[in-house]
Length: 183
View 1: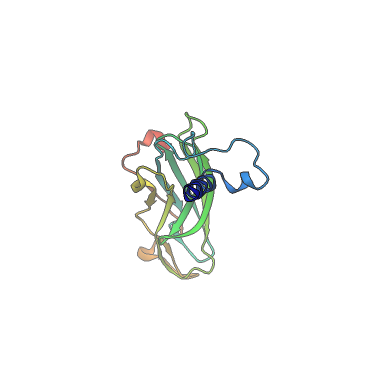
View 2: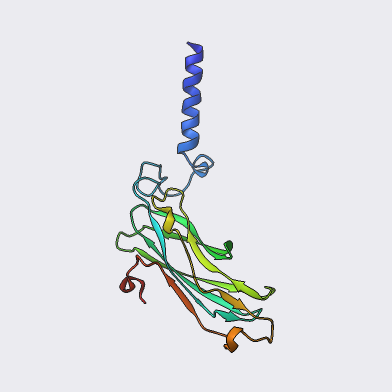
């Protein structure tokens, strides 16, 4: 009998630890605490997709700032705050928190990043964006990479083919309609 009571109390303690966020126990949190079964707390169908990545310039010198615009779509339901990341050669170089799903009519989120190439050695760099959520039912569209690389030439140096500094590139998920991306 004692063993059964201990097991029961252990189960209650584990459930309380998992279901109640730490801040709610230590002094409380203002507002509603969302549990896994409530709207936005991880229930339902969650599906984010990076739909478009636009960048400029694609030909730069060390010290130039690359401006990157990202369009992320909330394709399903739920509400959460998560990171969107700017990737250079697959590594995160910048991240932004953004909250999605607050309004049923608001499905597209536009974020801007700046990548400072100061101290970056000359070469080709692949740029991409990712918005990852553990509960995502379709994680294959959480990342989108731009096909054209950013070329960083040595200071005062030229670019392949004699092109001038500048230019831009846009990568759009082919499953995403142009009328919805604004482009």
